[in-house]
Length: 530
Image 1: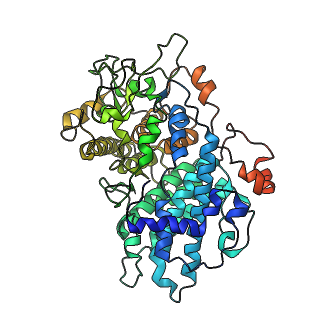
Image 2: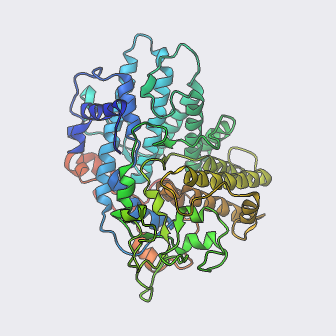
Image 3: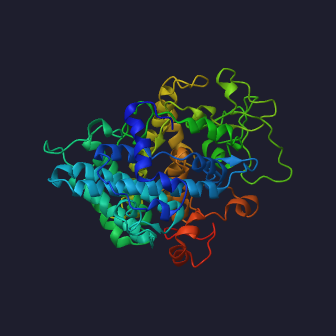
């Protein structure tokens, strides 16, 4: 992310202040005592925390190289050469620098003469920390949390123990519950002004974001602790939730100076992703290469046809007879020469316009996803009375919201020129989609639940990390190729988590051994999994 204005330049100063050493080494270096915890203001620290929410360069590369294939939201015709280990190190360093800053905010607030004036900032800090921690533990499983980050400025817990994923989940959900119940519009609250770059001090939006992430987290862990999660869900559905038009994330259009330069790089450096047969089968009612069978308007936003203008998906499970791909649809010359994909571009591509650096956001959660979580709740009767009719309403409202949201993304992206929608999908287009065989809401409870998960899978196209979690917590109950016993299973079925970076063995080995038993593997399941 390029930072262009003064308020975001502070980010780099604070990262250097509270955690730059961790970018080079492990926990020991990161947790050296820092003697001046008040040298940075609360606002500066908070702004740093917000800026660290972005997806890292190597992390994004592995989503394209591995996670899209695990979730089958896309297919990959060749190995990219990127290693998940590179992303592990990047995510670890970024998260623990963030955590040190986040806990320092708590420390600085606790030293204030009137801590009650800082309730909102404290709550906002808890919300960001919960969101980042959920992402981190879902990628790795058990991680250092309770003790981690404190040594940076308190001089203790240099080698922090690993917390169980269960305890982490319950801790951050409780923090989110506290935030929802304590965020206030009272005039006595101190403000960090322009340092609140995420929601511009919109307290109602902070409440909705906190409650929506809480709802998602509680549903995610429900099958592991129904009593705890069910109580959280029952309360969350009575509180405000994210609505259409409020989708939280890092939006370049809303944060001055925010530019996602890694978006272009992640495609051009890893140009092997294509529309896969799994997504194609869910979005089109036939295999006509002219696209006449497409019933889901999101298909032409998420993907584009090959160089010949044909909709040809790449097999999710290719065989030795699968024709090879040789195109380069992500070269930057396509900004002015749309047809320059290379004459050997045989397969439909992930849309080139997702390279956009200046508008397309990094999303945290969408209104459609919140509606689909409520559909799941009423379908299963978790925290509420089971109600198939309500589940269907939430499900259909979610599909409409998702189609409108992604169409608006295309409409409002100035870089988007070719196949740019002229308006939102018509009622007829939406009704055709809702009536299609795979989308029409089933009277069978189990089938309907699978349909809900399928729509989360589609709407989360640019949040593959969330869909990977959905895949694991539902026992793989997502659309997938009918033959997962060959290529896909052997190449991608082994991945259940990122492995810890090697720095943990160098600097925190005893706690690493306790957490792993001395060995670890990508195939080790996390606590959330079925």
